[in-house]
Image (tube, rainbow, N blue to C red; front, side, top):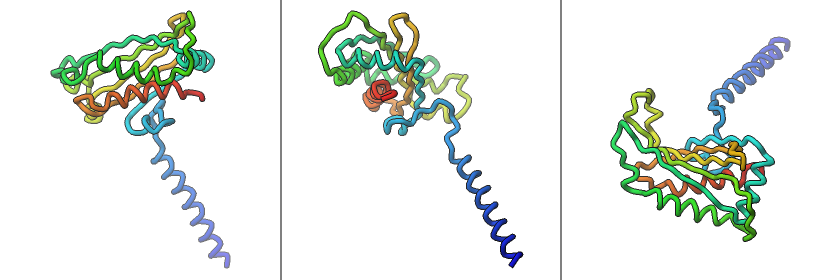
Length: 185
């Protein structure tokens, strides 16, 4: 009887050790990875909120129609830039603006505006700084940054897109705005 209790006890210890090892292996160890929304789970994404009160205030400003943003692109340097043969910054701005307007609930303009800016980075796959094959899998990423009236960053999100022709950029732009507008809600 004593022998069976020791065997059972040993198996239980083995089970718990194995379970903890398995859960450590399965855990996503990349710091800052965002997985709150479905659109963030599809690709690599990072987000960081720096001031919850300011974020809520900026979300409120957008809901009241205080919309203003800037945008830029960063083309590949070492590779031939292809992305912007398929999609222009003006087209991306239209997509971004349409999604931004979908969050407006009231049309009450306010003097104060927070600064929304996004940029689209085209992955430069021939960049000598890219050492791993994993760094060449995505086509680029979109970064959305929100700054308060003192030009201090309050929120930043980065989300990859995968198609070299930019056919998934609209989805990525939408996801950046959804990430911001649902942060802490």
